[in-house]
Length: 245
Image (cartoon, rainbow, N blue to C red):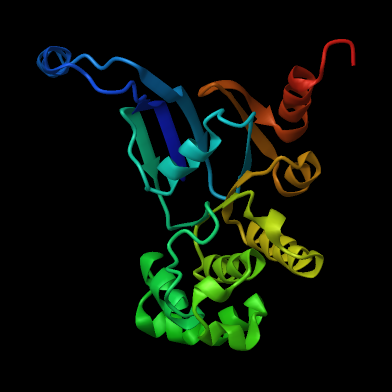
């Protein structure tokens, strides 16, 4: 059985068009027709097995983050089927799941609980998380006093220490300093070598080729290609280059 399976998945959002007259609003309710729907994903199908690493590529607005949010369980499809067969840890928007008025320690406990850890398990890995994050005594300060790099350090440290089956990373490594960036890459490679599954979004082709063996190319919510990382990234890069280059 696949660890992640999407079957004919579509995700839509309503586009705002200003105030509606009452007649038009009631007509849409009665006929169940929705106008001005935006398809973030349209009829997307793919599966991912244990140990695979998948890069999600495409232009801004292609549907990459929407796809990741469905895997993470943050939203549901409007059509189709999404099946997830393991524990997911997601690094999506920087600091998502954290609260600015809570200290780093409080956010650590909160985020670990949201990711499904018991207090006993969190206590066992507490020191390892803080050590990996490298933020020192700032762990006792409110998160609103942190730099963006420090928030990313803490978020990444928690995510990789909860031992997920699936790790989702969406561009957040870009805000870290060089030393921590290298530390994160080493941890992700360790994660991969242990047979876990990785979904990765980045505009760095070199990073994707280093960390992933497969790519899914999205364009306007549709799957354009699904295959080896080298073949699909080459197709995507050719599509975005100006004519004649």
